[in-house]
Image 1: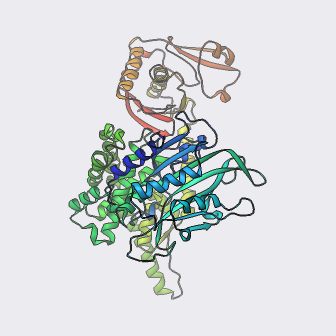
Image 2: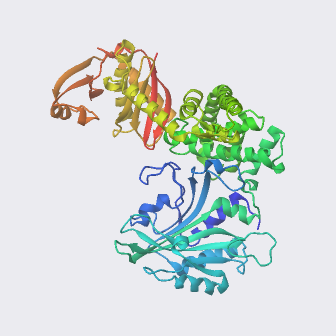
Image 3: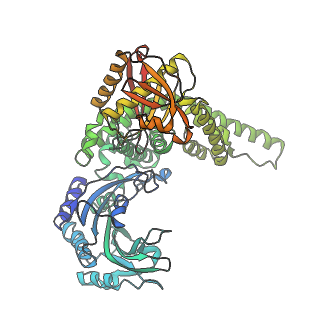
Length: 603
């Protein structure tokens, strides 16, 4: 059957709602730190606490379509089947129904709703081992539904078993994977060579113990079907970039570049990379816990995606504005219904993408020249040495220091240098790059600490004003946003203050305005900044706050700015707030999940 992405979303949710499930919607793409991963990489990942026994507020039957980001194989993006952002269609039973209902519902969905031929459906189930018996129950249920007995395959634990590796006391169990033949014209397709996996149902019916497995009292079902793959499959396509999730963007890239996607080769590869990386960037920036490009953590992954896309714009002989146009299509046409937050944040998303594109374009051309100089130097050396010594072994490695210089000075991610090097028949000394990076990071850490108290890089008059202003900012954030806000770091120089704090999202425009208003009001009042030394216990009793208790001695310095701000602090402060000028928040950034950053200036 032919089906659009919007129709597929609707059919999945409506089907499971008709079976008593609650659509719980999608959660943030950004990992919350509880699972040890940077992004949500599987549809069931956010449900893990509930699969492990926690009660879900929406009950025992749940469904959704969850966005995921996987970036371990970024370099593979460019072929017809790899994506960095994808979605998983899921549904769950938390101690409710089990195999009988689930096999019947999946069969009904695939044959009645999606119109697949039951005589072509294949399924795999767990073959059993010394610890757990063969899953005969699921096999018999499948045959009873109408799947041919010869189309039910028993597979080993490596194929049809799910558990959390290295854990004890956690649920686990066999899974039932569903397969359908590719439409390649063969009358008798061979399993599994001519088949594609379209989804799986995991039956968590055991508890893992130190000695093996034992039956669970409350059994769970975890279903996962790839949205992008199912859309591809139901439309009889073999190229993931030909579905309506990408085709409008591909068409726009063709119009901009004057090149044809169907001609294949490097032009098609470039269009896929631009489309995929732009989509993922839009999703990450527009997420409810949105991130921005940076040189660390998740921000580095985002920067790498955008810069790789920009590089391939150049290969298509288009400006990086092509990414902006692609982003607009994803926001306005493709994901307008599924992700309405993207439309709300459209201007913000586009401006941040353009900011990163402009930043990279400014250094890319010069960086490419430096890269060429580096490679030409190696090639000249090889040519010269080969003439004088026939047994000379050619140099084929760009040093780690050279790669780091391209990264540090010209904004080249090391992966970009590696890609460019591979095109010239060279490799990069990855260990040398990591060593140079670690040395740089340590120097930056020392600089950021400033070897001064309070995050100051100096104790100049201007820096002292900014340090005092951080106290006012901290107090205002507690009033406007949450009394639970605490400082998580700061860096202050003579030009601005940088203040990190715990908060789940960026401030709204109204909140920014209110914080500025509160701070500037304290400045207008010209409040005295009063320092007193006292014991740590006394400071706490009098309402003074501080974060780094382990660094305090028996006696501490406290600074009170009227009744507005009361903090324990060891840094320099002005005598009264009237000298600070006008406080203005210049920028907000994401540092990591749950940690936000404000940069502010005094005018």
